[in-house]
Amino acid sequence: MKKQIYDEKNGMSYTLHGDYYLPDLVLREEEPIYGKYGMLRKQFLKEHRLAGYQYLLLTGKLNKHLNQTDQEAREQVETLMEQMTEKQGVTEELKAQDQMEWVRLMNNIKASAEEIVLKNMIYV
Image 1 (cartoon, rainbow, N blue to C red):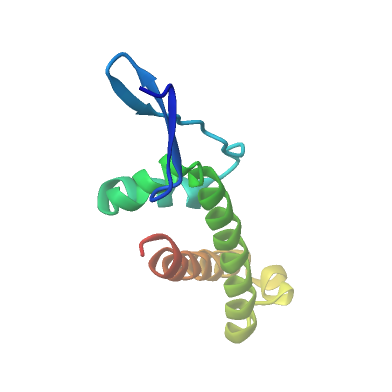
Image 2: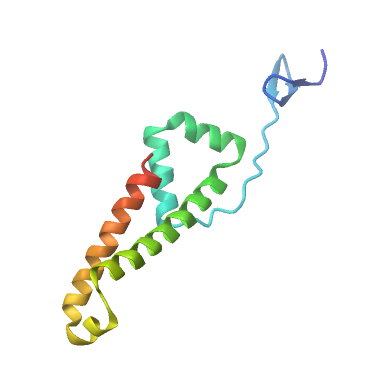
């Protein structure tokens, strides 16, 4: 029997160990630098899209996917917050006049922006 074989169907190589060929698995992942949204995406994939999670994990693309998702989600939240503050008229003048009202509005805007991003980017 050959010591190593290559399967063209799946693009993987196998090494003979005893009587069995075992796949040569090497993880070439980038560093996990993701934050809140990356962790939420990872949890969602594990619980609801297990096949997709396992594919990303076994191909070494999981951390890249989570890092990219986290960065895109943070940028989207920031963009949505800017648009909503402008649309609702939340300004620095309001912050100077009525700080508690400004904080209330900003918290509502942030919660709304995060809800949109979670629904459209993380939980899909």
